[in-house]
Picture (cartoon, rainbow over the protein chains, first blue to last red):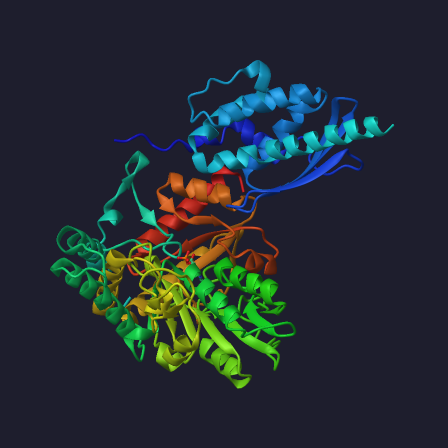
Length: 157
Length: 411
Ligand SMILES: Cc1ncc(COP(=O)(O)O)c(C=O)c1O
């Protein structure tokens, strides 16, 4: 008998918890940059704002429409980057992206990714990797714009 | 189900339907609106062509060249017969339905058929392939795009008819790939004619499942695609009225589409060659010919009756599931074999993933019909679609897998 396709490795309890009770969901006023990202294959969408305090990410607020994987991923993103510098956030992003693109061969570092390690199973479902990365790519875009805007603001003053 | 139609017998022609998936689960293929499976007869015909008759067409003087040319043109003859074309030269081969529609939009534009102040009418239930080419044409020419709306039941809103004296082109789908609706296309073609507008019918989901007679329909253009009608990928069909095709400029330039080429310019071959630049889909034409032979042997009336019966059964079973909402007509009347639905509390992506873990293959997403989804205030749906090999047992497997999905997500 061939091995059953293990959807349980995809839908880890942690992922379902984040999906049902997402952390930091909703768009909050202010913010230094807002982006809207879409997954063109399935139509999942996210509007995400990065709120900076100097070089520290004070808040990531978002309105996401999509599957459990993309929603849970946005929730974990919020956990992992809020309260850290943008540079630290990008380091975490790199680790998460490496995990997602590792086809299941990358051993995640729990110290860096915390609940994000639950996404290790997603890497084995190529069609779902984009779902997991949607909010992270939106964060990368927004944080880059926000820091760029800050730098421009400083130059101008 | 009618006793003349033996699904079990039909399934024997499709080896893939015997496939086992991960966990040794049998494949339940409910994604035929996306692409249909292929019977052995079609695959064998393509194989035999490549293995025994392969050569380029029209330009090869040798014996194989003659055989390949004849085989390629025979595919055209078979398709023409299958759709009731009044002459075989009205069948233009493209690479798919999308290219066929783009061809029409491009050459009508080049022929100056629309300009500023003119209107192009489409509908909100179109596949993106019958939206984007018209948006591009409108942008190029300054024409305006107008839309037929969709009623809450999922039918075309014919009461609010956007066709007026300003309309130059009307392009509407025969069967919706998302809602399953079968539209009264003969009526729409008549309305287009009454104002002197060109008409195009997207028959991508119609030709596979209902008897189609393009001459009786009377549209200027009909587009469809080989891979949804048990044929191969890589071939689509544009049917056009011959005198109209003969009056239009070419689409792509290249070999085979010319009459003569000099350094000063070229003159163009008559239809269909005018619209078929370069080496055409030769083996695909052979495969499509075998596909229409296959469908004809089953009888399109029987295929349609089976589709109707299986869709009625599926609708009946699906509405039993609480939290499940069918998006599209809920009665099996003027309705094709695609059923899109939402499941409360579970995103379509997650539904499809869970169904796949049970061996049930469906599609989740916007099905290239974002405006149609927007009509119903949803971003995406799960779609199960049926075909001539679908059984009631497969619908039962779908229903059971949906119950499992609900439980899994606590919905
Ligand atoms: C109604 C309709 N029109 C057009 C198409 C496009 O077909 P193709 O992708 O083969 O060009 C499809 C299939 O996806 C369809 O369902």
